Length: 371
Image 1 (cartoon, one colour):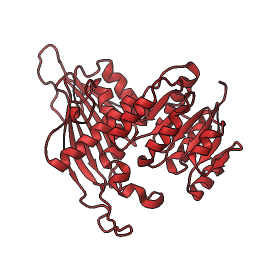
Image 2: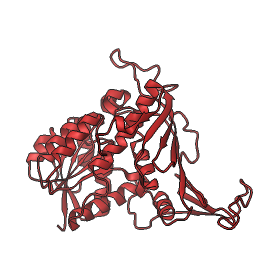
Image 3: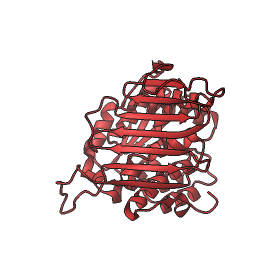
Image 4: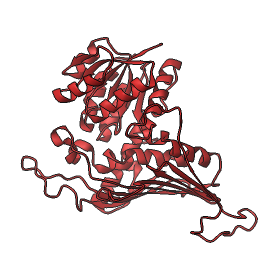
């Protein structure tokens, strides 16, 4: 397949980001667009270099025969309907934005519907492809910090952006902030630790943002800050620290991996990677340099010069599209499949249940037996 024909379902900001990445990557053309919002369709069409056909409804796009692959970038709560229809075409390749779904029962239904298809289904979880994060994962998996004990992820940022119809102001539409915003972080934790989570304990709330907003008599109910602790079978732990009224940050995203032999830190947007090893570890089994000195810590900026479009995710979406296209051409499975995408949603839902009920929540409460 020399040129892959793409359809974009959902032409909002993320749908248009996908179009930019596809043209920067090459070997792709956008042949069809679908969105019920005319202004979004027009904005997406202006980016297209091909004679893309425009549809009001996604079913019209799917029935057109114009696409080898589709990108689904519609509001979270609509993914289930979009995916039901897309999965009905067995040869169609699908890249669906995170979160995969907002409810576990919907995700389990999609797993059943996807059985026996030849087209791949890839859940977009781009954070693993950000250059300093990808390098951090490589070093960690190569033993650069010994046995991994802790993963910490901090995002201190601005509030949610406005969306068409303000759909992202309500948990019924998003799945909740810890699903909508953070499922890719939970997926990243699992990837780094090479384990699947056992239980979650979380504390969070809606403290500052959107408190004075009113939409037809309905007030937003999305939380804006939380701490989430995730425990794994080996005893390793991960922590998410989220604050969405903390835009006065320099590096608003920090990912930390600590092993028994060293530590890694990835900082965004500075693209900084820090790596240090504990002095004399293995000989004395004791501490070496005092903390805070910075001695023995390698600091460097990490970038991938092959990235032709940085976009809003530091080139990660570009790399993800490259890998998605390569998997289509080579007949390989998706690197991030439906089950992995659903597990990340489950961790976010477990965190919300923990906040609501004030208790530790086991993932077994949400996942089917045998997972």
